[in-house]
Length: 133
Image (cartoon, rainbow, N blue to C red):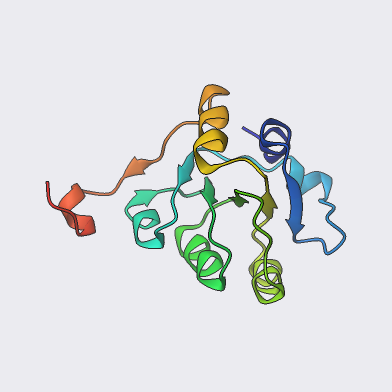
């Protein structure tokens, strides 16, 4: 799925990298191969979301750092959240597009899944991520 499709399906606006809320043609044609919805960044690291879409309601710089470590293609903020300037600056610095929608996490994930975006693969067993099985 292309980032352009994510914007259309979720009625999202662009927060970065362009300060004017614009994206280049290349950014809009960027592909997201899977999607993961999470507000716990430790959960994000339990899945292979390389070249994927991180869908979250968190807006702190740690989201960008986690996305960078996980090599995600883009971040979709939900629930109408806005990015603080320090988070926008960091997203621009590392080159991760961030878009936002007023939809809930549940609705955004559902629409993207229904349109064909797949879930990421899990790393190892669930208990490897600090959970009991």
